[in-house]
Image 1: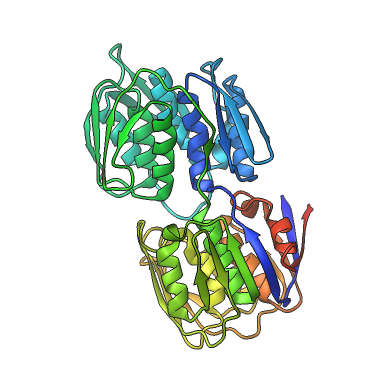
Image 2: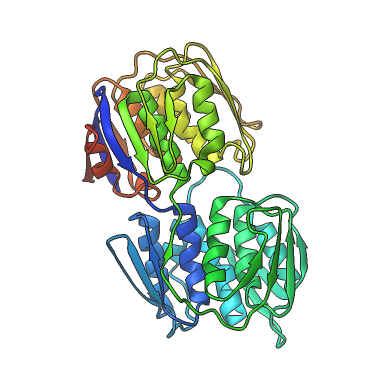
Length: 423
C-alpha cells in the first residue's frame, strides 16, 4: 500500500480539471464485453479500479490498452473463464460482470464483490432482476452462479424494491440482448446510468427512459461500436475539489464539470456561505469567510450524494457552530470520524444506526498519522490534512487512488505540498 505525506496549511490557487466519472467507468468496462466489435472510451480516469478491471478482462482473453486517457477494449475473442478472485474482490463494481456475462453468454459465475466496507450493500435486487429475466441464481460461499435454460433471457416487468444504482445497471446489461421488452421500475436516475445507456444505444441498443424512474429496453441481437464514447465528468471528484477549494483556496477554478449534476451539492455550499461562480462547464470558488453551519441529508440522485458527505466534512469544521450530516444511504459510513478526531477535528457519530454525524467548529487541525479506510473517507482526510498545520501522513492511500486519478499532480499544480510514497 502507498501513503500520502502532506505538509498542510498552505493556501491554494489555480485550476483543477476533472476527469471522467469513476462510477461510469467501472460499469462501462464490463459493459464493453457485450459488444461484437472493439470499443474505445475517452476521458478515462487513471485510477486503480480501471487497472483491476483490465486484469479481469485479460482473464477472459479480452485485450485492452490504456494511454492518454483513452481505453481500447477488444472483446471479439472473448472466452468464458474463471475470473481472478483477487481483482474481483478488490472492487465492488466487479459485480457488473454478472449482468454483462449473463447478457453475453447467458451464464455467469462471479465471486462476491469486494470494494469499500461502508456497511451492508446487498445484491438481492440484482438477483431479483436476473431471475425475472429468466435466470437461475445460486449463491454458495460467496460465489454467485447464474444460468439460463435453452431459451436464454427474455423481457420482463421488473420493479426494484429499493432504488439501487448497481441493480439498475446490472439489469440493463442483462436485458439489452434479451428477447422482447423489459420494463424496469423504481430505478436509479444517476447521470452515470444515462452514460451507460448512451454508450449502449450508440452501439444499436434500444434503451429509453434512462434518467427517469422507468426504463424500457427492447432487446437487440447485436451491438456494434461506431465511435469513441467520451465518459461524463466525475461529479464526485468535482464535489471533492469544490470542498477543498472552499476550505483552502485563494481562488480555484474547477473545470470540465456538468453543473446540473452538482446542483444539490452546490446548493449546500451556497447555504454554507461559500462564494461561487457557476459557469457553463466550470465553477470558480473564491475565498470564503464566515461560513454558517448547515444540515445535510444524503438521498438518491438528484439529492445530496452519499459519496460527498465525507469530502464535505472538513469544510464544515470552518463553519461557526454545529453542522449535522444524516446519511440515509449508508448510515454506517463513518470510517473517517475517528481519523479526523486524530487531526483535531470535533466530530462524532450521534447515532450510527440512523447515520447522524455532528460536526463542530474545529480551528486547530494538526498533522498526524491517519489511515484511509475507504475512498471517500480518504478524500476527507486528504482535505483535512491540507487544512492542518504540520505534516499529515495518510496510510492505505491506495484507497484514495481507487477513486481519484492523478491526484498528486492536480494538487501540486495549485500549490499543495504533498507526495505519494510506497511502503
